[in-house]
Image (tube, rainbow, N blue to C red; front, side, top):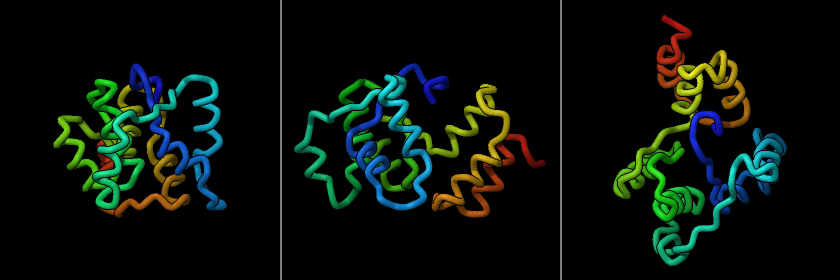
Amino acid sequence: MSELFDEVYVPEAVYQEIVHNHAPRHYGKEELKRLVSEGVFRLYHVKNRSLVESLYGKFHAGELEVIIGAKELGAQVVVIDEHAARSLSKQFLLRPIGTIGVLILGKKNRKIAEVKPLLDILLENGFYLSQRLYREALSLAEEIP
């Protein structure tokens, strides 16, 4: 992601959710810890805690911190997968892109060779992806006709 975007910020709630998740198979945990410790990704502490708390329950803390943190930082693009949170980000005048969109962007910018193996890893690690969206992603990545 750091090769696709000028700066990548990870809100504290997202970091905690990924790094301190005790599930036996949580893909990306060690990679995220390394990227943050090396300064490739920056850990961000959202300042407007009251706004996060006022919307918490309707949305997860991580999603809220992504959206509110992006506004605080003056960012335009946010990486969010969940449909309702993507809609909320648009209300905040942000442009959401999902994990699949990041992979396709990486392929189009020649940062990754293939999307399919990465989609398969995501699926193996509990990422929800319908068959329709899986095929659509492969089509957009020009890996199937």
